[in-house]
Length: 66
Image 1 (spheres, rainbow, N blue to C red):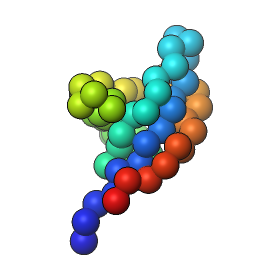
Image 2: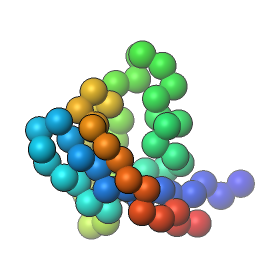
Image 3: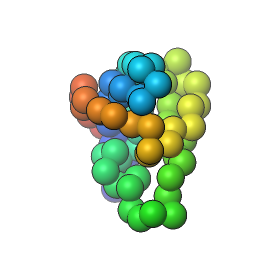
Image 4: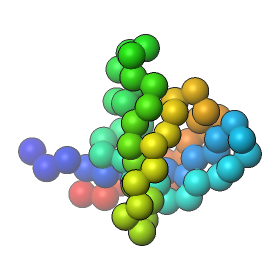
């Protein structure tokens, strides 16, 4: 089955607003337990960013890419 990419705009606790962040699968799938606190995401330019779940204040789903 082909994996879908979800695109989010994410607000961090630092006040930084990340736009068009691509994540493989829904964001909530990356919060599978307390052991998972860092995970890589990709911006629209293909740049990898490592996010901490403890710094995400709000994540707005923009669209889903098939």
